[in-house]
Length: 290
Image (cartoon, rainbow, N blue to C red; front, side, top):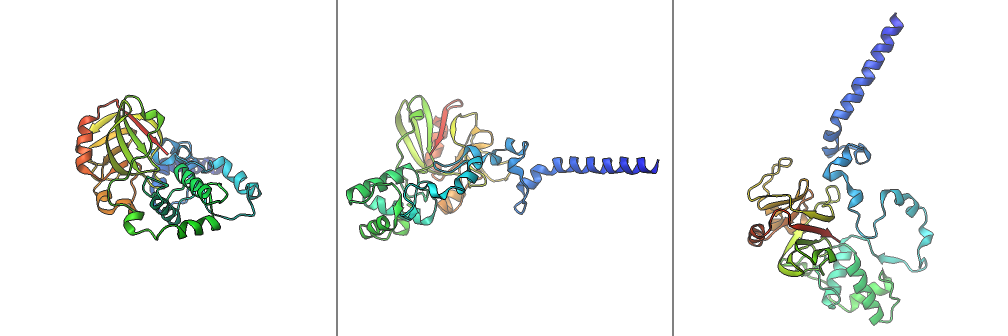
């Protein structure tokens, strides 16, 4: 009998622990010091912040491929030439590279710090014009040539205070009424039937709370809204994917790209966004792309 009581008590404690862990899961994923494996949890995948696998940048390996990619460094096409920067990198040095390429009129978009398709194409063009191997990646020889052909970028060149030049629209933006949002150029273009009506600077979520990419629709709008999670103002909010929305950010207006959102698309020009808010209708398309 005593043994039965011990067994029953043990089972009861184990069950209680399991239930407590399930109930506390979301709280743990939100705490800054947590080291839990919440991103791999089935329940965590239902939250906007826990789906980074759908937000990988071009050239960034998926979690399942990362092990094999790191295990085969010898697969590089040019192992004898060390690359300083290449497609998929993100750093302040990449930002400087982009600013110098813009000085050379090989890039039209503002520096973002992310080495994407436009940067690769610009580097290839520079290499072809200067008798270098047109790999699209920056080795020491290419970097020294770019530095000697341009001047050290100013703070305004690295982070322009004015409106950023809009990237070429994604093909999915060319029909209908669309908020066409480029992560690479950090711009939003309001387009109707393939024509750009207005443009504005935007910023996105951090690595931990990424802005989802894809094709969406405006589900609902709120001129005066406060986040129910972070309790911060979200004026002129246009929700397109769960809790993610296009909205004005006073923090973005004040600090620029020194900060990030919790996943929303922040706009820093309140006047432009106010006009856009009036023009956009529920059901209009939203395209977020690299």
